Image (cartoon, rainbow, N blue to C red; front, top):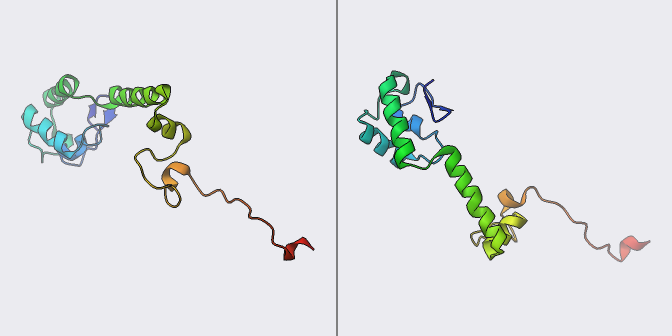
Length: 127
């Protein structure tokens, strides 16, 4: 498996698809990378030569923020929102949806599985 920026990219997929396995590289950026590096996007990743991998790595370092650096930058942005105490920071802190989604129903991705709360006992159950 070819290795770029500490990530193994799949052998048997086209180069542009393999590049999307890097955090922060989507389909559009992957195609642009192939074009800038002078690599055919449809060539399988296992067929890439060492100099082509080197050109891709150099372009990623120079022009793009990807992998660990991008993850660190995202974490710092969220920490800044939490520290200044803005609404978005409070939502991050509480683990609730940040971008205005409803929470009465849905939002199970952020809130986790349902936690059932017992209801009030009825009059008939008091005996």
